[in-house]
Image 1: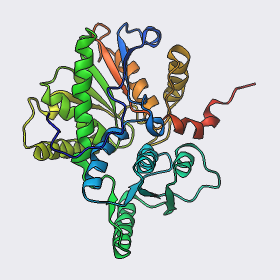
Image 2 (image 1 turned 90 degrees about the horizontal axis):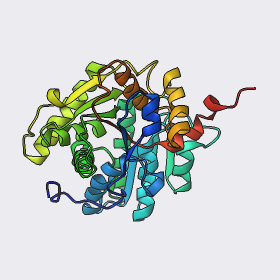
Image 3 (image 1 turned 180 degrees about the horizontal axis):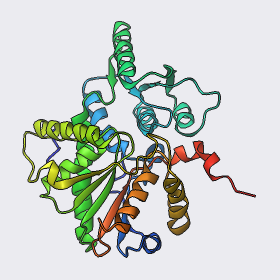
Image 4 (image 1 turned 180 degrees about the vertical axis):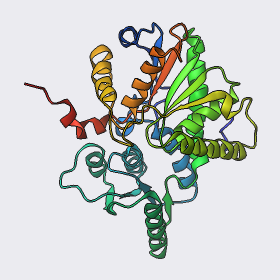
Length: 330
C-alpha cells in the first residue's frame, strides 16, 4: 500500500459513507448531489481531523510520546479530536487556545474538557505567537522528563489522511456507478484540502476539486496548498499524475467577513440541509462549503448534468455554541 510505510493508529471509522442528497439536490436544482460523510465517525463525535491524527499519533507513539499538544481557537475541531484520541490512547493532552478563558464552556471546548484535556488560554494572540508558546511548552515538558509531541508539527504527514480519502471516494463512486466530476471541499489551514488534492492528482484528475476558502484570501490559500502539495510529493518520493493547477480551483467569494464569521447564506444553509436531509452543519467550515457548492451550481460553474460531491468535514458540536443564530422568532 502507498502509505503503509508510515506508522498509523486506527481512529477513524473508514470508509465513511457516500450518500446521495435527492431533496437538497432538488433545492439546488441538481439531481446528482452527493455528500461524503466524514462527520460520520464514532470517536469524539467525528470529523476530518481523525484522518490526520491517525498518522500524527502513529508517529507520536513510535517516538514514545507521553504528552500530546494541540493548538487552536475555541471552535477547533482538531483540538476536540486530539483530546478524544489522546483519551483513547491513554496519553495526556494539553490544548493551547489563542483566546481569553471563556466564562462558560460550550461546543468543542466543553467536549475537550469532558475528555480530560488540559486547556491553556493564551489571550488574543496570532498564530505565530501561539506557535512560540507551544514550542516553549515543549521545552518545559522535556525539562521535566516528558516526551511531548506537537500535533501539526509535520503537516505533510497528516495530509496523507486526506490523500487516502481521495482514493477512497474514487473507489466508492465507481462502486456506486457515480460518474463523479466535481468535489467541493473546505480550505482553511490547508492540510485537508492539500491532501485531498494530492490524492486526486495521484489518480490522474478523475474529478475537479473546488476549494472553498473559509479563512484566507485566495492568494494566501493557494500558497499554502502549493507548499503542502509539494511537501507531500517530497515525503512520498513520487510525482503525481496531474499538477495542482490542473486539479484545483479556489473560491474565495464565500469567505464573507472572515474566519468563523458566518454569512446569511451560510446560516440559511444549515437550516436547508437539516430540513431536507436531516444532516447538520456548523458555521465555521461546513455551511460555507455546502453553500459554495450550491452557488457554483447556480452559476453554471458546476453543471447540473455533472455529479458533484461535497466533503462533510464534521464539526457538528460547534453548532451548539452558535445557538443564538437559530433561536425561534416570535
